[in-house]
Image (tube, rainbow, N blue to C red; front, top):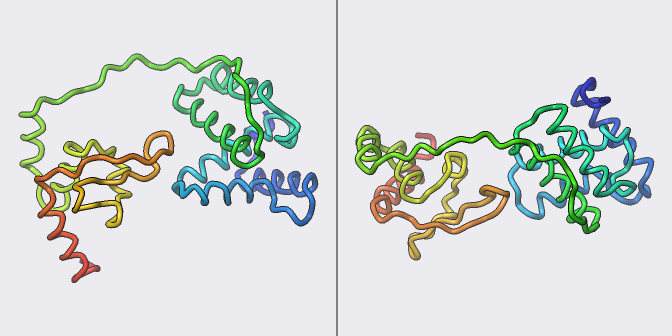
Length: 214
């Protein structure tokens, strides 16, 4: 397909140019509208980049047609192509679907019906579950910030990137809870703040406040 043979810069300029020709001059270009909508939702920069990339690929797959001129059938064709021809994983296909649903619902204000598409196959994997003793043996090897992060992963159920992106204002010591921003499915959620790390976390925040470069 066309988009596979084009560099990222070529895709951006071509798509933006196509959208500029199809939209009134006073309106922001389509991709800028998408960026603005994503930022209003306070999604992460990674989500923004991912959504923009999938929208570009979708447009180029359909020979640069404006998304307003397309709908469920074109979305299904694109997602089926990803699963059948490109052999992408189910999570990658779902990522593309989320980007296109966001485009139509949040930017173009078009409601979509059900999709008739071929789903990518999910690999059959059993989760690895550690016993309490195994977790304890791992945590006792850690100290300082690494110990706090380990306790957050285990005690608060945070994913690694959720823990890495955690901000001071997301931690509520009074209610002993954590607000996870832009988690799985680009959703926010609340989780508990483990009692065992409250004081170590307070001390670490005070230390960082006094010595921000250390």
